[in-house]
Length: 214
Image (tube, rainbow, N blue to C red; front, side, top):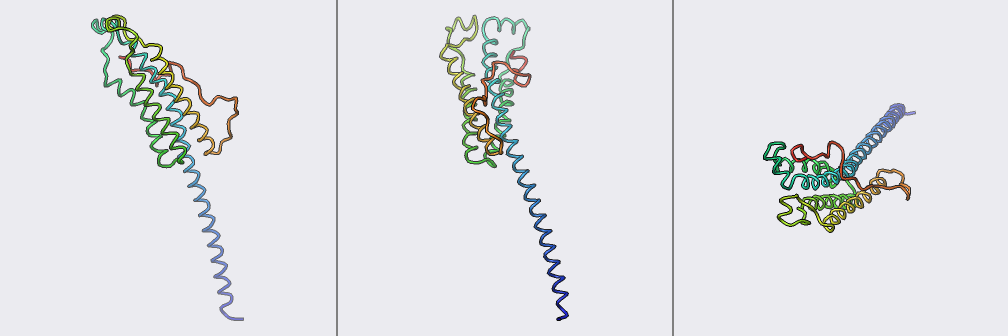
């Protein structure tokens, strides 16, 4: 027997042990990376789903504030200092705070989401932008003099236009929820279970309009 036989056998055993240990470490690291990636995309999906619904409430609050902060009574209360004048910049910042989480989630989905998720997320984001654009349009149900005296009011068609954009968001949000559940390995929802509901005109404290706009 060659003198080198035990050395070669020991060396081979050592290499096999080292290879097995390296393979185990590689597999564990890959598993951790996959779990972290799944958690990252799950958080982005959840943030877009949640913030899009709260944004609907915020957009409706905008229209309610436009109605309540117009007319002769509003001007009188501001003149008597019963209420502060409306600050457009503050209202802009309030709307931006509602849009920012959604925009951040969409940006992240564009980087790490599937092509289908990116397409649906973009549809949802655009629908939210269309909603706030419609909600911020002054109502034309009254003439100029009546608007000055009584405040803004919207025609039935203008109210229907607002509802149309709300329903678009509900539809795109529901479609995005289905994609998210599929990609995250969640079981499909029953056909009789509503994926999303039309939020009411009022919401929690996070969606409340600025104090000087109430």
